Amino acid sequence: MFSGITSSTDRRSALKLFLAAPAALSIVGATASAAQTQGSPAAVSEPTSKSSLLATLQERLASLPRKRNFSTVPFLVDRPELWDKEASEALLAYTGRSIQVWEITDLAGPWLNLMREAMNGQVFAHGHPDFLPVGAVHGLAHLALFNQDMWDKYDLAESTNGQLDKNKLVDQKPGTSPADDRQDVNGFYGPGNNNIASLQQRGAVFVACHDSIHAIARGLAAKKAGPGKGADEIAADLTNNLVPDVVLVPSVVAYIAELQRVGFTYAKAS
Image 1 (tube, helix red, strand yellow):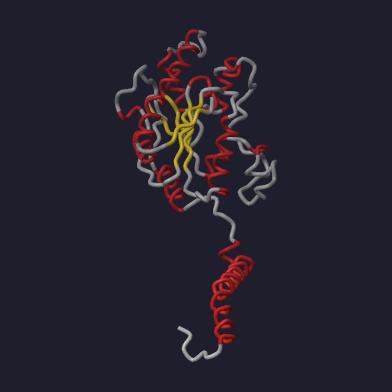
Image 2 (cartoon, rainbow, N blue to C red; image 1 turned 180 degrees about the horizontal axis):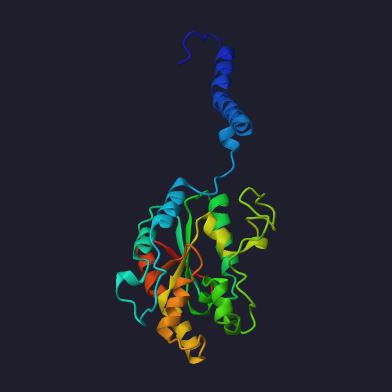
């Protein structure tokens, strides 16, 4: 191994150099890595906020029909023409690895904030730009999925027990955009901009529940909201005026089981 080295001094010097080599190489490697981190555009690039996979799903969902031209709908949905079957199947077929369903029942609960935090953490901290959160909305929270025309027409604010005077949960805060600094608490990614539209823009999908719509309609019919209208007609009117891009399913609690079956993790947003 040390052939050609004749003196003990030379052998000791060579041995020291041999033992020191790995450490030296490690230092060189670390220095090179640090230099690459500081100087390489790839190393310092910002985490993308949305993967092409998620963008493709958004395009697919936008191209699929939504059933919004009803004159009447029954209590129990049992035919595909009564709900957004194609869009719901596209959600179930999504191949991204990071997928989560939030069960949402409390209109005034923290669900918008929690979904936003989940998106920020998954995308910017854990590096999953394909993260798909699905908001499965039912119960009183379903009022959030009707446009303002329905709030005005049926006085839906009265059903909120004073929590909201209009539907303030949908629209994006004026002046915000995805180009905002993500450290700005009042910017696009911050708690000052908690709303359905911004989350949808980032890739979140909200699922509407026919069962909840009909239950709300029955309550309105009992109050004689809308002259001469029965529950089936009011339910049709509400369904036709869901906020843009939501996916209508027969029953959210049934659809949650379908989402879990294909791998969505469950979270309760209250």
